[in-house]
Length: 173
Image (cartoon, rainbow, N blue to C red; front, side, top):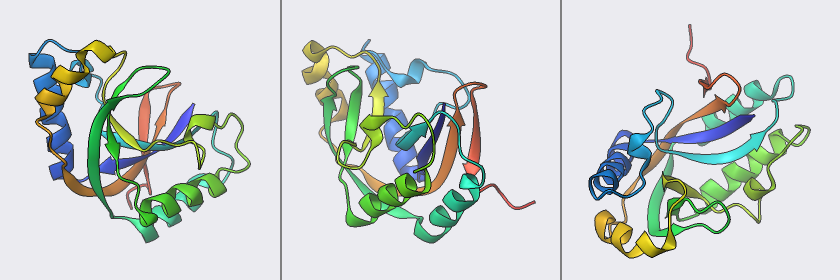
């Protein structure tokens, strides 16, 4: 599986990591416990089995033109289905347009995950996986009711087969 993700600006990244740490300190599930080097706050725009030939170049052009995208976080919720604890992202016209453009670029890709499709996508930053609704009140207290702001200032792709990330666009050599 290959993803297309937006990466948080340093201040927003720090705010999310602080909440990860607070959740862990409160003995709640938290992504702070995931020590893999690729683990960082991000917004997933799409996931597919493999990228079609040439799509990384098209994605890089999109991100070069669109980033940074300002962002404001909304409320903390437990998503239905897989039950992750997430911080919802307020969808702006710029973010929604970028998401749609990424989906257009991936139109020929196999294995598109329907929960990321325009119209079904719930933009969010994950705080914990497999979270219980019963702990939501405590989790909201831990986050302190904040509505952090920042931007998505970079993009990357995660390769689930070898657990590596590739910047989009790739840094110049």
